[in-house]
Length: 318
Image 1 (cartoon, rainbow, N blue to C red):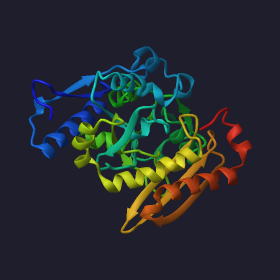
Image 2: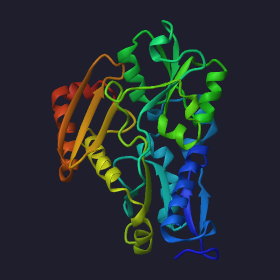
Image 3: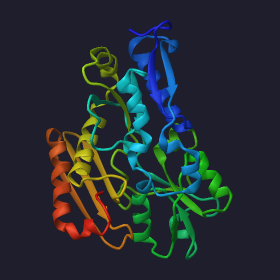
Image 4: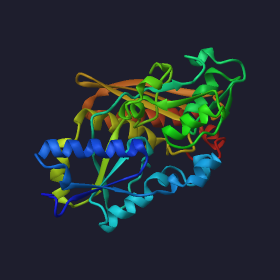
């Protein structure tokens, strides 16, 4: 068991949201095992995705390395033994895990919806023709374009605070943020409105925190086991299988959300062209034990329905 003399090291990015997620993980470990906070050390690791120059340049994520920009340095520290576990936003995680590492612990999921944030209007429909909306998410931009093709959509990178500052500076009239992140930061009041899940499904994994560990580390396995939320894990198995079937990463506008209803799981998946003019979606249900199969089958079906030319137009795999 960790203690003040040999604390368990929790690796995380240094943004306010990443730290809030690490603190939540620590609090759950403290409660689950009757330990003191000083039995855990929060280790901040700067990732390539946190580089100020890249954020300031507002370059698309697909041009500078993809989702791995937010995880590589942390995973390197985990593999080398510099930290004991790593805490991530699930939607930042590439589908494939580095050799030697395991995702087997998921905290209870937060609100999965997207929030509309604007200092001037309350809803997307209220924006004037040609309004500028900023987002770094290809999925959000495609969904916005499908509903409001008149909008001017611009790249908008950085943490929540950085994006809000850009709104204050007038770089854009509105942006979209994950409601989960706003809730975890105690900033839910800045959401002017929240999108309906049926009309605006989120990114796979949105709202979920995952804890990564080393394969074969039985001590960590035992510490993390009480934290794992089975319902969240089942839903994510479905969503991640959907992503995997589509070969999905930051180049693909993909939405997908699985919800547990009793002994069944309902899934809504969607793929879009980057300009939002074309999309394909599926809504299916299965028993809980078939969650991953459900997601994989939906992904394969949409890939076949859209055709490979649809994917080729994106200039790369999802």
